[in-house]
Length: 178
Ligand SMILES: CC(C)(COP(=O)(O)OP(=O)(O)OC[C@H]1O[C@@H](n2cnc3c(N)ncnc32)[C@H](O)[C@@H]1OP(=O)(O)O)[C@@H](O)C(=O)NCCC(=O)NCCS
Image 1 (cartoon, rainbow, N blue to C red):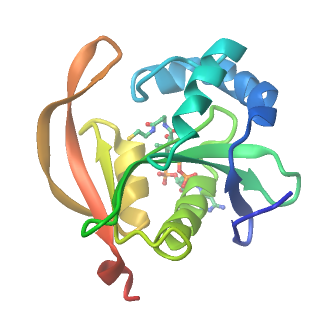
Image 2: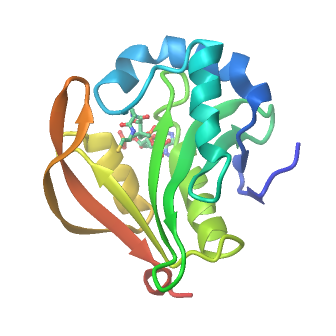
């Protein structure tokens, strides 16, 4: 397995079509956990997965997986979306763990690796995360990873049947001390 960055327990790599079966099983077991917080299709059929993967064809979005180093099993997913180059060098991240992988600290370790990779190899300067105000686990996670709260965006994204308010969090290279 070609990993892009490795920590003590997890490593990150690019997502690929070969991950369909493992991800479909994770998405099926996690349907309840994900529906309220994650936009888009549930990714349990091959057609849904193919459509989802097509967003990574161009330079705008990159998809990563957080994997356990000892087994290679997938523990989480992180997308770097809406990459803007030029004088911004910024992107928006979206992420999730799964029912069987949440609550172990894998996402904290994986997101820290992702931030390092985004600011290093991807040459980005700012990452933004938008989180619903009642998503306590996600707010705790993003704080642990070093993001700062920038503001509040009413009716920001259509998720689970309604336009949901989100808090806007971000981290820049400067905040990491680099
Ligand atoms: C948001 C989400 C990714 C957070 O995942 P998470 O599992 O809480 O994050 P981590 O993997 O870093 O785990 C941290 C938790 O594991 C616990 N933990 C247990 N063993 C640990 C260990 N060895 N090391 C570190 N933490 C450990 C921590 O105490 C923490 O729990 P706490 O917040 O109750 O204190 C997850 O809840 C999720 O996928 N939710 C649905 C999708 C979603 O909301 N996505 C984000 C949209 S903005």
